[in-house]
Image (cartoon, rainbow, N blue to C red):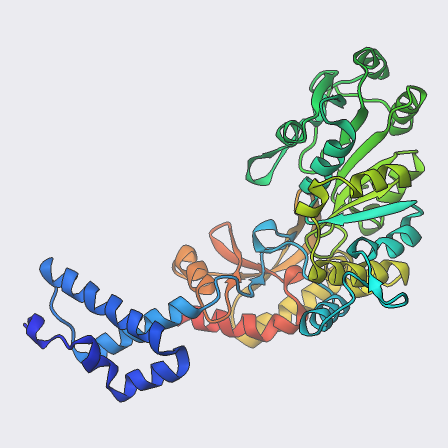
Length: 449
């Protein structure tokens, strides 16, 4: 067994031709750091009884360390789970136009805060606002970094140290332990809870006016359902109570649907347009859920309220950057041009026919030469349309260890994520972009080796 006297020094390792290749690729400082890391690990392991490896093994370890250090932790993943808005996998993929818009403003200077017509400083707040106004008929709009920020900013600007009326049935928690009551508390607003978990009446809102609230708030229950003995007033009626008292109504829609999901065989998800038509003063929603764009929070509604929010100090802390604004503007333009169903990936996934899905899965099976084509169900995900599913077709595979097979898929050159159903690995074509078919099939072949 070799001892530590056979272990090369840092300088000896660095002088080899292999190390010079690392220096050319990764730079000298990082290469030296990796060599030191590996040699120190070998010394520590030797004390614990492990032998000193040969030079080839040492070099392999150093090369692997350098690649691990420089590999991006955020990488492309093929989503074969059938969950369209998969929060853990980045939610909505962007359209080609949105990606191109990002590339153009990322690779060059832009007029982010410059008025080209007047030749002086402008405002980033105007970007995307015009399209939002045209799409929804809202008087004004503001884009921030996510919907939680949108709600907190709106409440901070309009309701700090004052009460905000909300139904107990809407004190929701979404992914990651994010809770609406806690966001409201951070904004400085005071909760005025009305009704019960399952039922709230219009008179509950009327009684709450005795506390002289600053606003009414509705938080849409986008990620769960309350069934059975339930009841709540129509949105228009609650808005009317608020307006008769001279206070604004804020609607947190969350998912941000601009299309009617009922047209695609799903339950109806409240739309932004419906809220505005009901007389809501401010609507807040996400950009990366049913809107199908980048992560963003959008506030739109009455100009006097939006202008007040824009001037709040917190607005700068949560503002959207140029990449978000570029992608969002391009995404919104698809709706304005009536091409969202054809151009926005999540809407293509929702709208695709089962016949097309079956044909793709059959092509996958023919390419691989094994597997079964079975019926299944896809879900929207992303905290939208709880309990709702879309019929789909799945490729069912039967590896000896489904758990180990899925691990190999996840850790391959092109990571892919599937799921287990009835002791089989199943892959759903609905959430796999057509351009990814070959990559997925090659990953499956590699996982079987």
